[in-house]
Image (cartoon, rainbow, N blue to C red; front, top):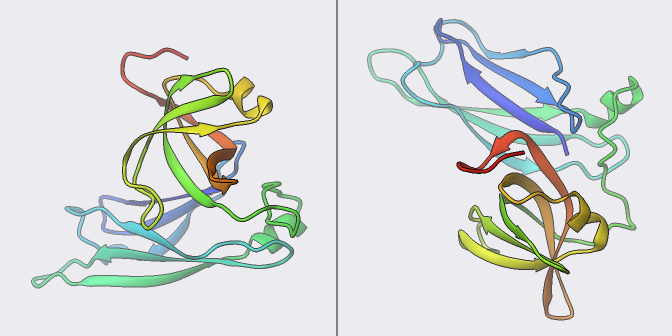
Length: 181
């Protein structure tokens, strides 16, 4: 449920900030000092290991282009101690538990809310879904909270040959062109 954002400052420093599911931002953390990165490129993140509940950590790779006469890619392995954040009183209320079924993380935009399904336009989920339109069955609580035109993150799972969507979280401020909140 938490989001992580990276950005480059004009001085060439690379920063990271965690944003809770309630969209509260933690203090930023410097990943690379001033002058380390070129400001002509965008840093990229890739999940290496997700949280697994309790006091586990997540890891992701941060990649950026270094500054200099011959710019090169620089890679950082970033560890995020979600368990420590929960102990400090900050909770994402999104830890994995043994009761949760397996599934696949998905991201996209809701295009229609039907009687028992959501029609979405997905971003690619490598190895699971190609980018494009798809229908997912959904339970009543997901359907009640869903809004056409809103971007989301969620979890998809195949049950008895049918794809279901769970844990849908609307992305704050993300509305498709031509739509209203």
